[in-house]
Length: 113
Length: 114
Image (cartoon, rainbow over all chains, first blue to last red; front, top):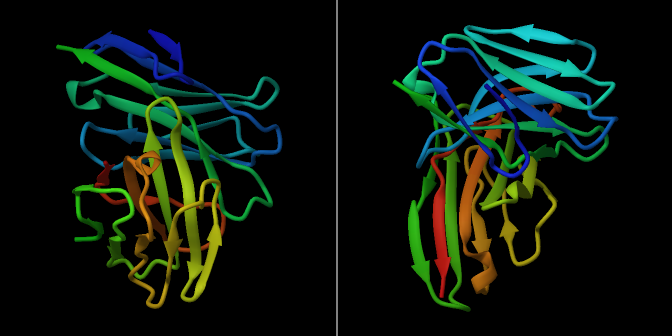
């Protein structure tokens, strides 16, 4: 399944399926992006990052894709597990804004066992 | 264990009563930052610090103060809290002050101002 993450939409997937979470970022000058995972009652946790000079970056079970033409970022989670249930949000860094990151509102992922 | 520690985790207070939320990191990070998280708005930056004695305003600094007298500590001060400061607050740090790099977050401090 996939969803667009700006107003905390929800996404439910079966355990073992792949998940795709999308993010539309705001500024074409943004040069660095991070995906975070936030479990209930906890602080956000870094998942993966990507610079604007890349289109794709892979980690362990996760892949981030960047489409600068349409200002779109996606996070793909392979073989989704119950422990992946959380809110996922992207953050963008806009140059010359003094180390500020701008965060999306997130997508809530629920993994059905 | 590498971590960012915030205290208190939960606080209910009344309008006008000064409070401080402490933040400490044990990773020798240069950069520290405070965010507030509100439903439908995502994380918004309040203040950040690129190193000791260097602090700057983020997007929503009104009503808050910070200080960075030591590298490990970055307290958030609400001199006269108001109900619109009811929120979930996160402190974060990262190794260097450049724009790349992983932000490590604390567990959050849920503040209610009556």
